[in-house]
Structure formats: structure tokens, C-alpha cells
Amino acid sequence: MGWMNMMKKLLVIVLAVSFALAGCAAEQGSDSGDTSTSQSAQTTAAATDSEEAQNGTDFEAGIYEINQYGNIMLDVESDSMKELGYEPGDIINVKIGDSEMEMPIGTSYSDVDVKNPICCFKTASGGEHVIILAMNDGNLAETVGIAECRAIDEDPGYEWIFADGLDESVAVHISMAKKHGYVEEYASRQVENARTNNREDYADLSDAEYANFRVVETTGMGTGTLYRSSSPVNPQLNRNEQADEALLLAHIQTVMNMADSDSEMRQYEGYYETSYSGCDIITLDMTTDVLQESFRENLAEGFRFISSHDGPYLIHCTEGKDRTGFAVAVLECLMGASADEVVQDYMLSFVNYFRLEPGAAAYEHIATSNIETSLAGAFGVASICDESVDLQACAEAYLNEIGMSEDEIATLKDRLAKEYGGA
Image (cartoon, rainbow, N blue to C red; front, side, top):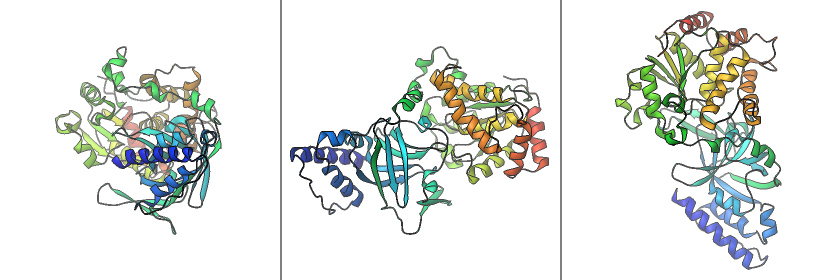
């Protein structure tokens, strides 16, 4: 994305010129060939003094990309947005098409509760400082009604169909709603920055713990039967080799890959040399929105695959904490686990990755806003921690609702109850 660096330089130059003119707004033409770029430059040029920029200068950007999860990447860099007076902890107003909403600025999707919108300042794989409008465990593009995602046979396996009257040139208008309006909440959620992808930074953890690989030992689950992990093949987190070795030691036979398509999985460097590649694998390429119909359909398909194959079983996504966390939590409830057991197992990923301590404010906050909220929404209950709620019955009803028959559910339970003895 070399265009991003050029955009950043352009905005910096224009901003400097506008200050030098002491309030003279410079009108920029649209002859550059990129309408959204010209619009961004025009608005930037309207920033006439440092006080206005500090409070957040209104600006307009274009949409560079909508990914498969409905996250919207803008065509400007976060550094440019910072120069206009915006920073993590601010609350902004975002208008796209006919939709308008407030959202905080953060650096991770988990800086807000599940199903809440977030403007994320992210660093892309190429080092670019990008701006992504998203919804934590949701689909922002479909939520705001600007486009609908459809599956296609060609790569990348999906396409976005814009709503009537909209196309790729739709503008995104951003203005400040409340400077520092989210700063305390943002500060309380800063756990993502505590994770590194350097093995030496986790000298106190075993290789399996570093890879977020572990056996599920909640009530009703067979010994050594179900495992969860970060990806054993995707090198993004620098944990794939440790996860693959742990998979071998656990004698994993069947894998439910929630993150990749089959072609994506096979394209990872060294895939065919891994122990992982010798397993029976279903690739589901799932969204992060647990309430989305495609997620529910894929989840049922993955569970059917488990129920028709031999264990031990492994469920993973990329990090092994969100999509995997939800899927495993449903199975734990199905097998008779308590809410405390489910939450404790879910949060162990955050202990491994981010050094969170049980009882800490951030630990409790994530547990409440993530797995407790997600399961309650899926099961249609006010709280999974209510002792009057029968989580096993809720899980069975949920699996039936997403398309599994009673016989399939019974077979799945039999598979998960089988004893394999562990690694």
C-alpha cells in the first residue's frame, strides 16, 4: 500500500500549508484521479489553526477495502487522522451513506463490548498505520446497510454488493463527538499491547501454553478428547510450530479449522511438512460474528464433522481465543460444565497471551463483555451466570436451532465423552 505513504505525505504538506495561510482555506480540485483522496485533502486544508485540529477537524475519507468480516478499511492512514486531532480514547461521529453512529477510537476490536462499533488504529502486515471501522464480533458493513457479503467460487471466496445508490466511491464523513470521551474505558481495556509474538518473552510458559494449546477438562468432557489452540499452520503469531508439536504429542486426529479456507490453509509455508497436514481437517473460513447466520451454519457443519470422525479433536482459529472460545464454550455447556468453568477456560487464553490475572478489572471486564455476553445472546438468556439457567439444555436447544438434529447432537455428545487419556 505505497499509496498510503503518499497519502500521509500529502496530508502533512497540505496541513502545513493551511496553517501557514493562517486561516485561508485552500480549495483542492479533483483532477488527481482519486476522488476520495482529493476530498480528504480538501477537508484537511480547511484546518486553519492548531486549536481546531486539537479538537478534531472534520474530514472525509474513501473506502479502500471491506474484508470478509465486514470491517471497513479507509483510504487514509491513522497518522494522518492523528494530525487532525484524533487519538485513541476519543469518541467520533461516523456517517456512511444514510447511516450515522458514534464510536470510540481504539487500537483493538476488544476495546469495545461485543456488537459495539470501534474505529481501530491498526498496523498492517506491511507496516502501514491503517484505519479500520469495525464491530467487535460483528459485521459493520452489513450492520450499517452499505453492502451485503455474498459467497463466490473465485478467490477470495466472497464479494461485496453495495446497497442501492451506493458504490465503491461512497464517502465516509468523520467528526469529533467527544474529545477524550472514552479515554478511561480505553485505558482499562489495554491488554492487546501486552502480547508479543516473541517466544523469549514467555520464558515462564511451556511451548504449548505459549501456543495457547490446551486440553479442555470441564465437567462431562472425556479425558484427552478435546483440545483448543492457536493456529498450527498460520505463522502470523509465531506460534504455529509450537502448536503443531503439541498437536503431535496429543495425537490429534480430527481438526476443526474455523479461520481458513482450504486453499488458504494449504498455502501456508511448510504446510505439507506439518503433523497437522496428516489430520482429518474441515476448513470453515468463519466470520467473527457469532450471531450471523453463516457463522451458525458453519458451526453446525464443524460439529457434524467432529461427530463423524475419531478423536482426539482440535478446534482452532488464528489466536484460538474468540471464535474458538465461543465454539468450545458451547461444547462445554453441552457436556454439563458450569458457567464458572466455561468462563475460566475461555479466559485462560487471555492469561496466556496478555498476563491477565483472575480478579483484575480487565480480566472481569473481558469475561463479562465477551464470552458471557456472546453465550447469553446465542442462548437467548439474560445471563449464563444465573444459577436457574440450565446451560446444558440451552446448548442442546441452540445446536438444534442452528440446524443439528437430535441424533446428531446425541452422537456429538457420545464422541466428546469418549476417553482418550491425554498426551
